[in-house]
Image 1: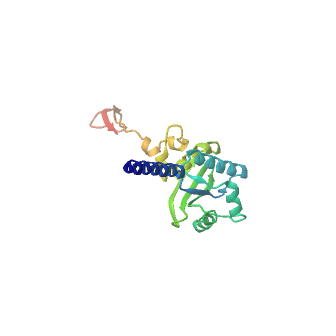
Image 2 (image 1 turned 45 degrees about the horizontal axis):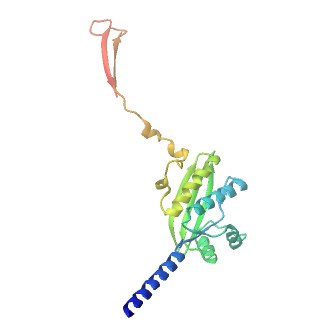
Length: 207
């Protein structure tokens, strides 16, 4: 009887511990997305791009995202573009990681440069960039950046159906060159004659 009671208590303890473990399971990474910096874009576009990235990361459910209002309060009037600054603000927000994003325009293109920083380890986990052919394509671009950040992978490894940027669909010119070969033939008519003939049959090969 005592053995049965002991076994019953042991099983109940295991069940309680399992429930506690499941209840505590969840995202362990707390991520802070710092205000976007930009060259050549208007404020509305910058804020829209930042909002898209936040939404795409939140949708994965794999990280705890620091609310935008808390980030703004911690940053204040400070312009944060460097890694030491990002680490400092990440510490204030008690975030494990931080993301720095810079948008650079080049004609109609928007180049998105971003860094994923390990605040605790004081190091860069990921540094990459992706190009959007136009501002209107930033939704797809931000989706790719979000996948890259969450998976800790270079952006080129996050390509999926429906998330390919227009820039990635363009085949490089060098790769698009096609091999060719052919013959051409005809008569040559030398002005001064050739081998006592007023014309000469010729053929060549081109590749």
